[in-house]
Length: 450
Image (cartoon, rainbow, N blue to C red; front, side, top):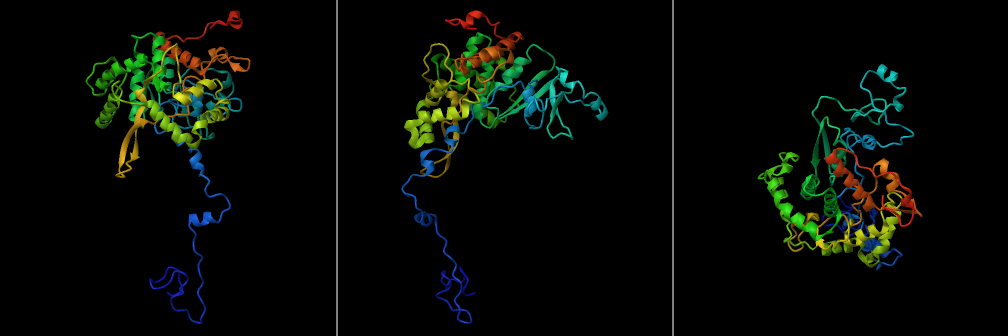
């Protein structure tokens, strides 16, 4: 019909100026023309040559990466930790739950009897200690789940860990249950990336390799866990053990690790991909992690790359210091610059850690097709200290987290080393490892190590 914007093909889009007028001689209403972004920007008062905000800095995805190789939360005993019971996503329950203040709402073991029995047991529950395992029990009156004893009768305690990124929860849970006997633990590990699953196999092998002393196992574990550059000693160890892991994945091995690892749930396609990942760990496979990490850093800091130290300091002061002050600023800065988080003893860290190599999808610039690109796609701003280095057993926390002159006497690396030593030692002996009693000599210069 005449006068409608976007009407017949023979009519102008500017209100029908070239077409017939409606009866009465009145002109039709002219709809305002929509302005494009460039036309709208032309009417603004700011300098249009100013770079866009995304030219100055990334939204964070360039720094976090696409593959998570380490966790950003402390390790938990998924069976007995009260914190794990309160949070919920653990072996202790099936509901996400909610973390709450113990002073306002203490965690009490939930009873499975009738409502009358619950009322009778209401008093005195706060003073009772229950050494039983815990599981989240639904309560119709309270939306927050409360921990209750695990049902008896099953041979295994089944634990599902999905997207855990590492074995921090597995290590602590197994260590804490080492000398108690009783029901066995069975973990189901689910990860999105095959590179992370391959690292799980590697760290399981290190934890169970009793041919190495406990301290050497700890040092090798930390070096391969969080360093982009490792010692030559670690490189040789990785090269030698890779062949054994490939045989384990292809089901052609009688490796002792087969007693603790079951790969029957994996499809053959997943096994093939695991095999391809492991083949990239041999020392003759090129992987220039320093160059790849520099490209990632330039993509994140962009025009502020030359001033990235100031941005690292800003991240530390605003997001880390108040929440995890045990993380030393100089160590965090070293990690952000070089990717080396844990340095044990006096050693040279110059060999690439090929376990951090991974693939991600990208688009071919010439053909426009989707391709897989191998590179370093891990995190460059969130350090690997949180898993083992920001908390410890309450028995040792007063000494390890002691403050002198407004500074911590120990660092996150010391805490990580002690925690892993305690886990590995308890796995072997079944006895918890703690620091010896405090002595006066520790407070007199030169200070003696605890």
